[in-house]
Length: 519
Image (cartoon, rainbow, N blue to C red; front, top):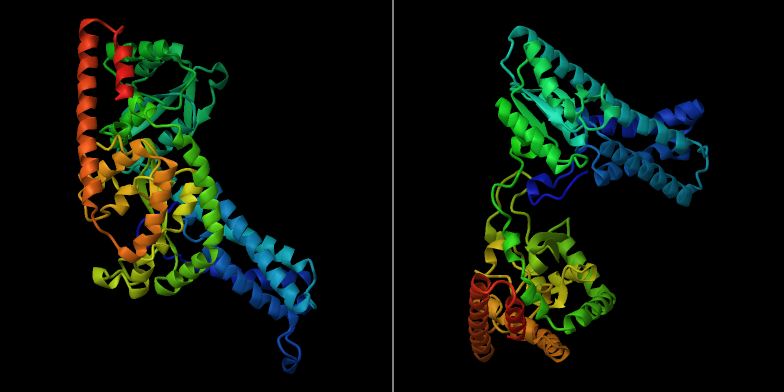
């Protein structure tokens, strides 16, 4: 499974020479297997024979299919099930497109109807077999190297016992096996399920249950194998907290290190995710009026209508982007949304890639063309964000989604609601005002949102393309003053709540909470 990466250097798809070979060989072999006479050139004056037409069209259809499904991007010696599905999809696309193309042009005259099916089987078998051979050869090479290292120089390995026979433990055992130079070895696994005892995961034997842990450690010691650490799989759900605590105490008594696999491999986050600090508290959430529930319905209907109405402009903008900066036409960027949840915001690309095909950096002033500047000025690059509105990541009107480093010092209030395509802060300052001033405008909008205010923002947005950005001093002063008063009242309530909790217990806290909601 291939994921999007934010780099132009990795964006160029490639085709492996062996894949090109099978794209050429498959239709030829299919014709030879079906009827060798189909490969007869015959009289050259009569044009291209049907068999060679089929070969040419199949090759032309195979190359784009290979690029679309990226079958050459995976490493053959690491061939997986996901890669096999991609190969099957590419083969199916090749057979379907070539058959449809020839049927429309020639009704497949002179080519047996079974030929595309044979071609698909040959092409699929060839692509999968050469990858399987590469994987087997690589695996044998690794095994041979491991045996050679083990016999050449015995190593003082750190020996561990895995708790939990699951996929995470199996992948951990494989990871340790492929480490070079090897420092750690999984010598055994234990699992609470009695039925699994005697079986193996990734070559590691399941030697007993969790209740047998101490006896298993002692038995290994009798054979001269000292256990150093015990790793608990993060996927284990069948063990109670009491059982895990007991094993941890047994390890501490014996001087063994006990840890979860994620901790042992340093896969746990070293710091708390910043988005955790951006989640609003219950008081703020209750202050959002009922209009925001209606707003989601308005957003869905409005975004659907706008997508249909703007379809001609969307196609024009997409064509201009394709001509100007090339594929891909869509630019994505991770932003912070409601309650600190991260999502991908979409736009039409207006900047050229930062690197050319030779890997050379393009000067920043050359990346934005006149076409791209015009698209940005007309806000046509924002049209794909209507899809964000449809799926619920954004709203038509609201605070703009910001990057993490552009967030104000306390972004909790502005993240109470979904970010918007346009908003009060964009119309009254945009990029001219500071992050704190923009935050004040956003907070003012959240607490004064109404259908009338949103209609006012819609009309102002339509005029925005002609007027450009400007600061509304009156709106900005009003928002800053309201923000200061709001934060002062909030701090006062928080102080009173803390004082009440320390002096009279939890009873009066509910009263203070009601007072906070009113403020």
